[in-house]
Length: 299
Image 1 (cartoon, rainbow, N blue to C red):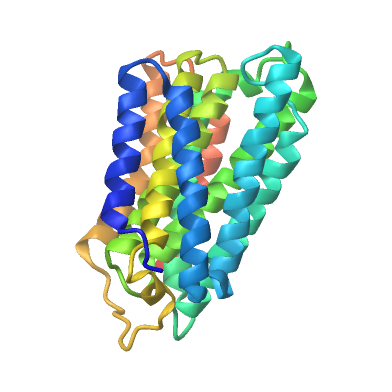
Image 2: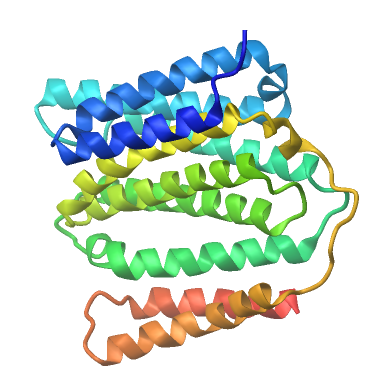
């Protein structure tokens, strides 16, 4: 039994996703892609036993929980007659999926690292804080301050946002750290990026951006496609190998990250002075203070 060629998985998933959007059948395309993902996953697990051990076990369990969460929410939507029920029993499954995937990320960092590197963790926290500041001011600030929205709904959105930032920090920590960066790595990175974007869009929909729900449904199949392509790649096992050499230099890209992070807070506050009402000054100031302390710790 041979692996399904990863290029076939990638091209097939992308074509189905794009085709579904083109003909107005995004839901059907999403279902086909998910079924294909499950088929590729089961076949690959039978052939390549390395992806069901170590960090892969946690990442796969997290992915399965995310799939279950989507199914449970779809059933709830059908019963309740609404497009996106919230809060829902599916949220408990969704938060569990995030927790397991973050645990898988921690395990992935450990198997890819020979020694602890505080600066990589600090950089990941800086990146997550910047992401949180932008998300707060673009999507969430008016929603979180809206007293007409039940407090439990706002609290759940805030909890989801914290989990999303945790996953963002974990993905950034893997990216900033050592280890192999092959085609499977970039496919998996794309999948995690789609997951994060999808979750931010869903939070945006709850905050009043009606278009964001359709956008999240449109991007979701690409996440499943990239994951399926990554795990079917013949070099996927190399992602859990420790590198022989770890570079300790601070490159230009890392310096650009630090400089850009320091500018985010002042830029948002300037926008607030020019009348951008969505800016949350208190949250922005707190975020800028956290970034400043992290940069000092980093240096």
